[in-house]
Length: 366
Image 1 (cartoon, helix red, strand yellow):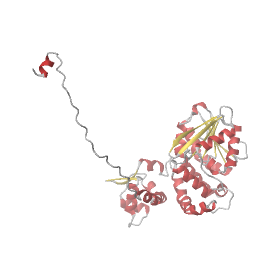
Image 2: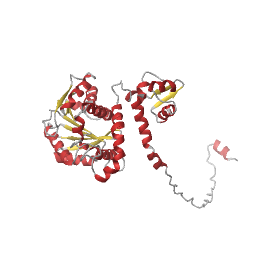
Image 3: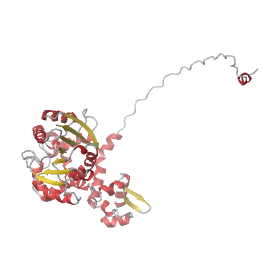
Image 4: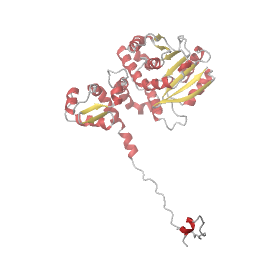
């Protein structure tokens, strides 16, 4: 009788003895140590090629020339006044870098470059690239000298970078536009990642052109905002805010945040400010903010904050090198550093939260 017949009648078949096969013994496969290559080194050596290609594209007006639609290589070359020898290589490099798209109709802006590098749009951040091209890019050629001497390399005899910048209206406007470019991402994230519904009035200390107040006010219609900066910034700030239809809720207050009374607010913002100064100035400013806040008020500090282990946020560490080149005492810092300073100033609690890109914020509450 077969096993299948027994199963058909509902009977269990007789057990079958199963012998386990002998395990095969094989020699362990040795792990190979990866062979070192210079690929990462070579990638870093060419980093400035990509940077300068993008800077030149902004300088030449590539993204503005494509704002209304695609163009062939010949059309785009003629619009920009480029020599035919390398124009196609230049455009295709921008495609390979993800800064342009190309199809059967020609070259066109990507979604990102069309939004952020078209000067006609309010989201334009090219002012930062323009400043980096004319100022930051040449400045970094002096990094070795700065590391040897510990001194700024910007060629200015002024006691701080702002004295020189604010003395000339043209350079001031260029700098303020650059600050809008660098602030757009964190300002948008800040509007989303802080409980603004619990507050009514904020003050952005060192507001520059006004990107942070504008984004906060646009995202939260119940908020009233104040931009605080040195008096020469006033006309530029007011023009920027008026262009976004926010003059009824966002105002400018001129002064020096180290010496002048701070406007009343229940939230203060210090964005990319603390890294401009040495430790005594940081402690003074944080103490002044604490004294000005009402109980339950908050301070938001955001920067390219270095991770506490100082291993991950390379942008924050390089920003600290940039502050060496630009300032007398400035440097970037870790979240734990900032929380320690807030505790010294009297803040009862604080926390660190990621914003966007290389930016994080530290929030302290009184």
